[in-house]
Length: 113
Image 1 (cartoon, helix red, strand yellow):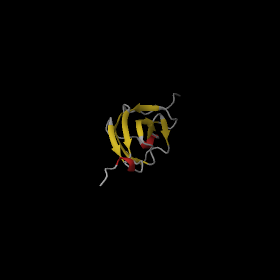
Image 2 (cartoon, helix red, strand yellow):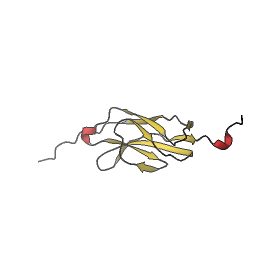
Image 3 (cartoon, helix red, strand yellow):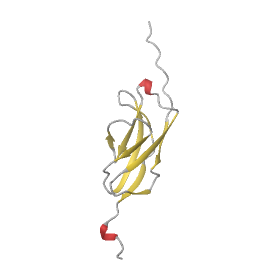
Image 4 (tube, one colour):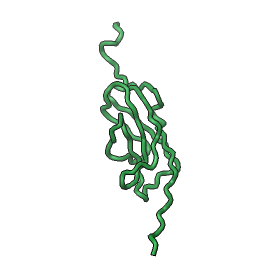
């Protein structure tokens, strides 16, 4: 007997919608809100999940929704990539890389009164 057919893999389209590419994010605590769009909807029942890579490093745990706040990001230029992965960690879809610049206000740069 032949094995049961495996369900067809959806043709996911993934993109990071926030922050926008080349955006300047200003936050003194290093907090960056990330929003990801996935079409068609994620098949979580098939073990598909959404993960983020910040500067090429996988962030754990996988996203629980399509929005997450990253905390304590260092100032400077960073790249973000969102990926849909299966239970084995195989990448099913990947977003284009988005570059953003985290800026923190410096006491040294405040105008004098």
